[in-house]
Length: 428
Image 1 (cartoon, rainbow, N blue to C red):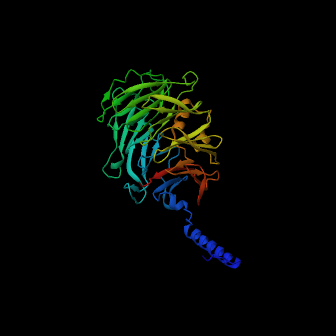
Image 2: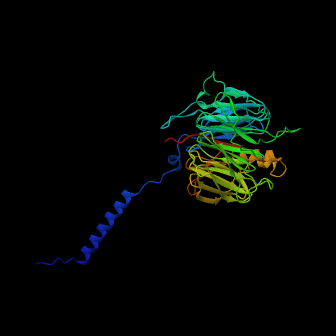
Image 3: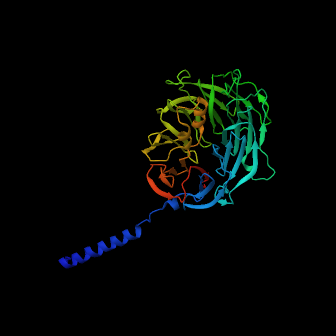
């Protein structure tokens, strides 16, 4: 048998050919880097609020697709509807509610961009204040007489549509709240304490109201010293209170989950605002002096999530999969909204929140401070996958991956903005 003997030069040639082949394979296997423009949905929008205009920004391209000048109201509050299409402007002092149509229409697997505009539809009620939205339905509580305004999103674009204002039996003026459950009933606060000689007090009970406005007087025997803040996911709803949280459901039950671990009305450490989402199983209740608590409506339990008196704002992501809070020292914390586990945390520089900068945290009345806790965070918003943070110069928006808070992009703005609110959607 003959033996194959390779000369040194042939071995070197063979190695060179093998390396060349490996290099070619590596070159063919290289995956191009995915850009932010490709990662974010083309239907995510941000309404950039300037002193005299709204610029509608398409986030993945950084382009202003339309500007609406005028119709800006000083001290009005803005909220995004559950579909992401509308901004609701609540002018409490002017007794008026108006609707900004971003023009972004969600057809589940695709979208359309129509002309943005202020709708001609408006609502005049005494002191409209607390806003709630779920499953395409919006409810606004009117502090001036205890009535509620009900808005169906699907009807808003119709010229002849008029939102329904419900004047409720035995309702009196108070700083209250309401929402609609997926069975068509409303859960609404009522004041049972004596009327205040001046100002507007907080409510003590929650009652169900039928779709026709009929009040169901049975409140499950739950009565507390004060109620403030609420949220719903359609099946369940939660109200914050001095004595714990009031839990309601779409089976006509009203019950109280009592305070835990130092929460109590005497010290002012009670849950005064609540966040949730149609796609979230949990609720997140916040005490301004004590931190954030997770409320599980199925187990009817409350547990501590974050301890501290420094929470500046909190919110749910577009799809309700994340709960985000940020503190006055610039820390941003992201939690899984279905089990309460922390996903990511880091310090981020961001612009001052206008409401807190203008009013201050110590000089306001208790009700005004509670109102501010319910407000959206106008310098930090999120889509399904990204956080958008307004930089201190108010001319840049930093984009962070919501899953690990790494910086992925910066949007440069032509104009300095006051605040920003989310619009649009992510296609399925």
